[in-house]
Every structure is written in structure tokens, then in C-alpha cells.
Amino acid sequence: MIPRYSRPEMVSIWSPETKFRIWYDIEAHACDAMADLGVIPRENAQAVWKAKDVEFDVARIDEIEAVTKHDVIAFLTHLAEIVGSDEARFVHQGMTSSDVLDTAFNVQLVRAADILLADMDNLLAALKRRAFEHKDTICIGRSHGIHAEPVTMGLKFARFYAEMERNKRRLLTAREEIATGAVSGAVGTFANIDPAIEAHVCAQMGLVAEPISTQVIPRDRHAAFFAALGVVASSVENVAIEIRHLQRTEVLEAEEFFAPGQKGSSAMPHKRNPVLTENLTGLSRLVRMCVAPAMENVALWHERDISHSSVERNIGPDATITLDFALVRLTSVVDRLLVYPDNMMANLNKFKGLVHSQRVLLALTQKGVSREDSYRLVQRNAMRVWEEGKDFMQELKADSEVTAVMSDAEIEDKFDLGYHTKHVDTIFSRVFGDEG
Image (tube, rainbow, N blue to C red; front, side, top):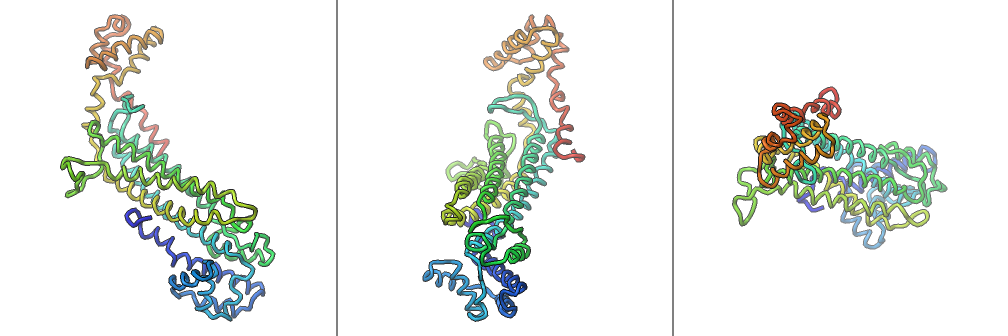
């Protein structure tokens, strides 16, 4: 990813320096396990640790790879240059390249997941704070983009909180599923390496041993991991789309924070555009773009082929770096979002009581009027509001068929906003538990 949409902590996970350090740890721990089993001399295993505090020369490894055309061999050659060729002769014994590559890749994904989980916690905290802040801030609910019935701004935030909490659980599951390693040899049979070596390496790297690998760790695990990232990204866009709509000039119920000195347009000085949430919509697309290739990586030839490799070299960094940046940006947007309750109330009343139509419909049926006739009576008066700008309550009071069964006081009662928010506490309790 380009620096514009990257944060250093996540980027560092995917740096060559970090990758080679993980490769080294895998090889060194494998040597320790081999020495414990008496497969290699203890002094050779100890010699490998001479590189523990050495900064691997990425340029030198690249130089070797230019000749060998093999990245793991290039790394092993450089490692031998550091610790001595004789001392390093048992490094990688019985192992295949994928034992290093796959185990290291999963270590990187686990570390990335830990950052993303921390991001999720921060976002959840922001959504929760804003939910309680606007728990009783009434606004109009919309379906199909059209006024429906009153809700509260707090319910919007609570809905996104619940969605992101589900996403956190999905991400935890994805982390657990990807946290496996394999040191099982050329086609996963342990023919040239003892399973105890795999167990030791995985324990040292914070992984569990893959129950059965071929030459690679099964890619359904990775498909599930990237699918989880894709769902999180979709939820990021879900929040962003809501904010973008609420910021439209015709709506203006909420707005991204507009900093002093910020400019919205090179041509129109009055502009205050939802640029951050528009950006989040685009970044979400990039994360989801990585899901389909991860799915296609599941089907490999026999015990492995290399078709997955180029894909993962791209989507591993791209998806995690992008989602990390998006979650942090969304948290900032939510934290600083400007909310305009007066505009909310003005929009709610724009069609002069029309949002209470269902209450009147239900009241008529309770009075003995058939549902069909009740709907006809309410819609007839509602259309005058739509088409002629009439006042809905006054139209109902002037309709003889309505007043034949409902008094003016009973009609007025159906226009109480509090009726629509009477179960907000119940919903908050469902979402936030005792704190709701």
C-alpha cells in the first residue's frame, strides 16, 4: 500500500527485515529441537543463535536471490555467511521452503490480526460513547431513502456497535484459525523431520501445529481469514455510507469534523465535503478485492503448486494495512462527528406529521374499521401532504370518515414522538448489557 493509507506499526509487520527475522526464528528453533532429539550436534544449534542480534542485510539477500532465483535459499546462504558455513550446515535439515514461508506468513497474519483487534476495540469504544450521548436524540428513520418513522441517533450508533462487535468475534475466530504452523517436510509426511520439531517451533512462534499439511498449510484457513477482513471492511463502508447521506446538504443531520483551515473544493469555497467517509468507501473496496483471490487459492494442484504465492505476497500486506488504516480513520470520524439535533427535528417535521401514519392506521383498525378501509383513509390524507403540502393531522381531523370513529383528542394522541422511543432502553440493554 502507498504511504498515504498506511500506518507504521502495521507496515513494519510486512517489511523484509521483519520477514527475515521470522524466518530466522523458525530455523533457529528448529535447530534447537533437532539438537534435543540428537539429530544435529548441540554446538551447531547454538552457533545459529549467533545471528540473534544481527541485522540481516536485505540488499545482500536480494543479490544472492538474483542468482539463485530462490528467496529461501538466498536467505539461508546469507545466514551461513553470518554464522559460518560449517556451523550452519544443519540449518533447514529435513525442511522444505514452505515450512518457513507458510509458518512465517501465518505469524505475520496473527500479528496483523492483533493490531486490527486493537483497532476494533477503539472503534467500539467510540461508537458506544456516541450511542449513549445521543440515546434520546430523535431523528427520522428512513427506508429506501424515504422518511419512515422516528428513531434516535443513539440507535444508529448502537446498531453499528453491535455489528462491529460481531465483526470482532469474527476476527478473533479468523485469528485462531490462521494461527497454525507446519514444519513437516517436502510433502507433509515428516519423512525427513520429526513431528516433535514442528511442535517445538510452533510453540515458540505462538502457533499450533497444523494437523495435516501437504507441502503447504491448507489455504481454506487463509480464505476464511481474508473473508473476515472483507466483512469488516463492508461494515466500515456501512457506517461511512450512513454518514455520507446524513451530511448531504438537503439532510445535514450530521457532518464530518471540518478543521480550521481545511478546504473543501479548489473551485467552490463554500464546500464541506464528506471526504473521509468517501475515502473509507474506497478503502473498503480495496480490502474486499483481496477476498476472491484468497478463495481461489484454496484449490492447489496435488500437494501444492505456487499459484497462491504471488497472490499472498500482495493481499497479505494490502488487506491488513488498508483495513488498519480504515478502522483508525473511521474511529476518528465517529469520535469527532458533528451531530445536528435541530436539523434532525426539522427534517422529521418536513412533511407535517406524515411519519405517524402507521399509528393512525392501527388506531382505525382498533376502532373496528377494516384494514383495507383504514389504509385507504390514511393514504388518502397522506397523499394530500405529499402533493399539496397539507398538514397531516388537520387533514385527518377534517375527514368525516376518520372522525366518525376517532375524536380529535384521539387523533392528536397518535402524533406523540415519545411513543416511538419507548423501547430504546430495552434495545440498549440488548446491545450493551447492564450498561444499557
